[in-house]
Image (cartoon, rainbow, N blue to C red):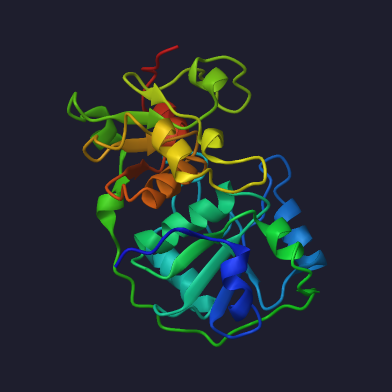
Length: 273
């Protein structure tokens, strides 16, 4: 079953005050890791729970795996169960824009959860309707979550390194970082050899919504007919925006290199600038 990966607040209006929605706040700031959790404590959508990029949407860091390695299957299931998530829940994810909610969306889809969407426009679109916010912590009874992991959505280092020449590899970072310029995060500047650049920010409009279908088709023109392209970024977060946007166009065979560039340079010094 295909479900469109985002939703407009206008389409959620009739459900906002019901128990049919499980809200998750994914706000985060790479420069201030406590920002999202502090913002959630200050104010959040009523009955929302918080998903932290570092603690919930990533696993423990090691020498390889990148700066935000995926949680293990066991860890992600435990997180879902501790939050009381069931397979038939309708999940709505939001942050201040897109990237962190998109990472959470990818993880839900990886676990086989169908009814999951990212709120277009982020929290600001909810606030525009003047719906109430809350400071209260909502808890749900622990669940038993029956995951159905979709491992075809994911590739590892060796698959990227040994990929067939015809496989399209897409770097989702900004053009300057792709070119090896203004690198302030990773120790080695550049990109994975053979990759092309498609900046995730080009898929998002100034009001923090996905651009319309025609704009997205133009942005991804070289990918729509490609067979199972691989997308990466710095650490497997912002690439999820491109994955989500491609799903919005019905292109669902895209794969995520979750370790991304930070994993690549931890296992090889082979880069291109």
